[in-house]
Image (cartoon, rainbow, N blue to C red):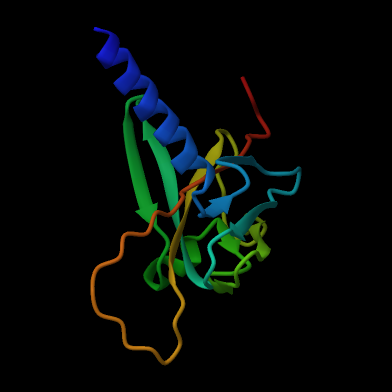
Length: 156
């Protein structure tokens, strides 16, 4: 019984120590609410020792009947239907660097239904940046997908 407690304490201490020294790619917030004009900013930070390449994608999220979640990825094929855009779709973050990615509403150019909140998933996927270097092997990189919300102008 006592040895189980000691083992549990040792595992807990190891987990705490390992989590303190972890370096990672981060975003400053996971839920972003737009300003009055539908614009916003998310800040990306590279805490890793090497530069990283970050690619961003936008998915429009619709909730149908309060249960079903539909996602529509923004691509070149549906460019005329886009309701938001990002200032940086691809970028390089050097070690210790942070950059702001602007989120711009395009509702002045497109017909946006403002009777309900507009929601978007902004996916930021990092990978190591090694220009001119051939890399073999498998790497696991964790990205983030904050939700961006443009609130309705007609709440009920």
